[in-house]
Length: 293
Image 1 (cartoon, rainbow, N blue to C red):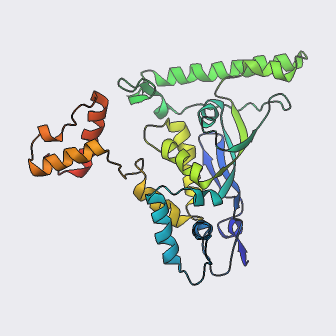
Image 2 (cartoon, rainbow, N blue to C red):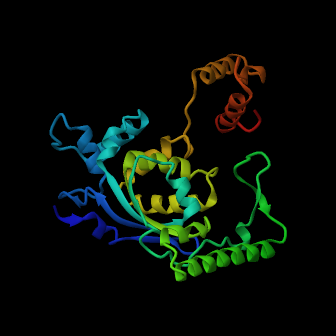
Image 3 (cartoon, helix red, strand yellow):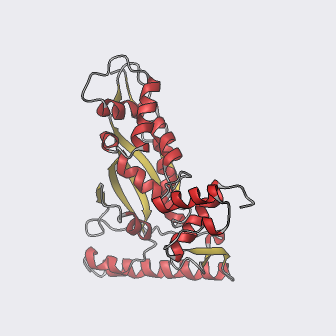
């Protein structure tokens, strides 16, 4: 063992997120690189070859093997690599985050500690309108009078903290005093996840359909781990359907074959499929066929 990964890529590298938040890489496993290795990708290839000795395998062999594993969804070797992060984020982002349950975590407790007066205040350019087609997401542009609405949000958050501090001063227990705090308040957590599940997290949270505020954190995590497992991230970028890759269903392949035999608009429709399925298929076709189709 000749050097520690965290020291190579920066001890506790950190990326600032939103107005008061951050993502900090605290640790990773493997934490050390054997002689001649340049990244933690080696641990994935080594686990996949557990039935025989590593021998004279080259870095390029490792790269090809990792691409094969990801291409064919052989994901258990990816679980040999783990990352631990220290994250500071608004509570409303944390509640989305905790939908991903394949992790170990510990969060700041408002029962044991007084919550600092920090809350997320969206900048004017992020005062987004409600989406018209996506009922849970953002639309185009910003709302009218965004400066006035921002001031109203800020006043509400300040008022919540004023009440919180008054409750504490009156002797009310912390676990009840905190109930007046807004979803915008910042919390902190330690989050540990293996690479297989982390890539699934990044699939969903780096995607353009994810809420902007959690996407900022996911992009930061991706930036931090890329130098540590570069071959794996390169393969993931190529093959993930969320990152530009594509998976075709049996019906879609049949439709393509029919189109190749008889190029027509009708051939490009999936028979006996619902509206949403056909819309998704048409979106795939925009990537596959020339623009005039």
